[in-house]
Length: 196
Image 1 (cartoon, rainbow, N blue to C red):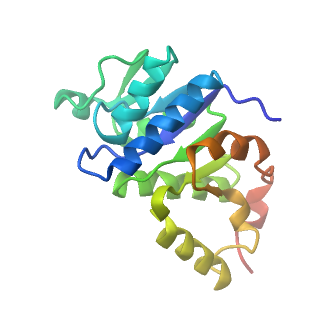
Image 2: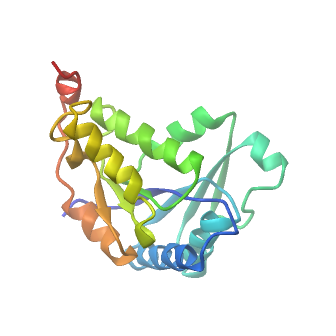
């Protein structure tokens, strides 16, 4: 089993979404605490970001928030996290998300979450990030994206083995086992990234 000390979670900041998403985020937070795994996330205090951070903190777990200065200025930051790192911009934030992480987990979210997830998949395709990427598909939220990714593979815009770069689970309790069982990704992935 791969050691899992720290994970980065991408997720929504919206407070208006279906309660099922909040429940899943809280359950995932409880799973992180149970397995003594540090949460790294976007540093927000609302939406799924706030829900998972609050759950980990309530269980005496460690939470590291990474937020750009301009977001902190408009009071989006969660002030109760274990560590809050203020960075210059979104690019630096995304780079810091990956530093020292043992896996990425995508919960439902909007354009920011989708952009972060797709960038991570791109980095993995190029061999610049080789850790597990887990998509928590609560209530089938990611079904259209997964369908599009599979379509990209079928139509040869992506390699036939690209689906091995991510794992899809439907329940928070499946996330940690999915990380532990994720297939290793090619160290030389860059050599196979270009389809010919």
